[in-house]
Amino acid sequence: MKKTLMLLLALAAAGGAPAQTGQAGLKAGLWETTTTRMTADGKDMKAQFAASAEQMKKQIASLPPEQRKKAEAMLAQQGDPLSRRICVSAEMAKRDQPMIPRPHNAECEQPKIDRQGNRTSFEFACKQAGGSMTGKGETVVAGDLITTKIETNGKDASGKAHTMQADTQMKYLGSDCGSVRPLDQQMKAMQSQAPAKALAAPRAPAK
Image 1: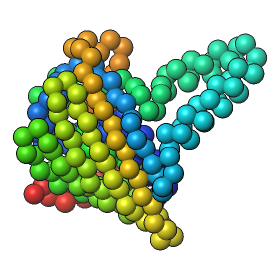
Image 2 (image 1 turned 90 degrees about the vertical axis):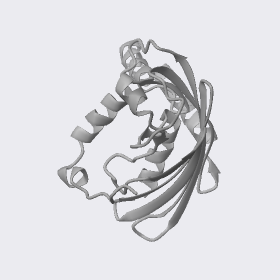
Image 3 (image 1 turned 90 degrees about the horizontal axis):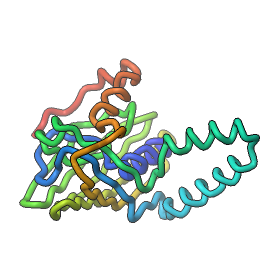
């Protein structure tokens, strides 16, 4: 479940994954997502991510030139987990979907979603690796800025409890995504690599 927790943190930082419902404000094009708060089991994960990134940069700097070049290219491809750019496809914009975390390889129920004007609240529940997790959040649209707050509670296979909180902002940069691959295409690629059991997992009917 700790792995699931970290996946949720990463998804929250990246803007999450689409859910099947409407959300005014999501436009096709390039968005920049920034994580403004991230805690796991009461610990500040933003500080830990920053410290790990600095440590990795120091390790890369000490490598031989050829290895350093490859490592720097790989690091640049991964991007900053707390601030990165995502591409919303025309299909995603047409469905106008809120960004709700769905951990890779987890069995998740269809999220419960309630939309009131520019505010969308949601709840989700997932199972993975013998553990379970429930979460809730709220998304607010204000022009070209979308803010999201997420809280989760769960237990791992041993019964140990875990909590997570994350606040993110999505800022619209323009219609041209450049070399950034659309988010829905990335999610399809991830799903195609998932084990058959995870892909075949039943989901609760939409309410």
